[in-house]
Image (cartoon, rainbow, N blue to C red; front, side, top):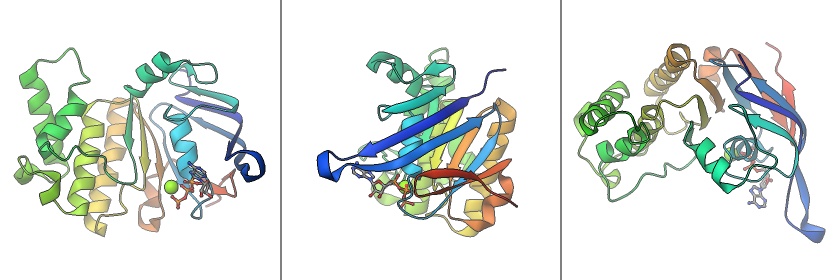
Length: 227
Ligand SMILES: Nc1ncnc2c1ncn2[C@@H]1O[C@H](COP(=O)(O)OP(=O)(O)OP(=O)(O)O)[C@@H](O)[C@H]1O
Ligand SMILES: [Mg+2]
């Protein structure tokens, strides 16, 4: 089976002219189907930048990036949009729609499954919310949920779309250790059951054991972690 993510010689810069600064340097990374890779590294080293490039949210400037079989270097807007529908993304800040309930927010993810009926997608949304421990909060608006609960709604929304790749930027940052553990175990189970690959940024040393592989970033360079 082809790799889910294949990156070679990836360089990235921000800014122009005298302000131009390189934030990714010769990054190489391969992620196989069903593999859970954890990415650690100090603040500002380039982790989120790498995730947004893999998620086709940002244009590749230099290097080879191939995600779910789609080369991103020359990909146009349409191809990047189609690819994004196959990727689940959980980013810092929850990006929930404020006027929709928890259930409706998750249903936005489930609605990407075009072959399911409305009722099936609604049931799926409720099921994912129960999985993340929010079965009693289906009808609440984001405003009435805690930070950790909002984070879990965002996770349920990403999982409800049955992604083949999940990109998660510190998904447990706003969670207490028990809930964080549960969420990470859930991501791991999804990876196994659906052959979904997971790339997760984390500073949380308590969850490192879920990783099939640890990689570390420093000053825009990626290293294989030891131990
Ligand atoms: N849109 C942007 N324009 C200019 N510089 C940026 C932009 N986004 C990020 N940067 C800079 O690029 C570097 C890498 O940022 P990035 O967000 O990838 O770091 P990070 O590893 O995710 O950090 P953190 O752990 O704090 O989230 C930082 O120095 C940041 O200030
Ligand atoms: Mg970041």
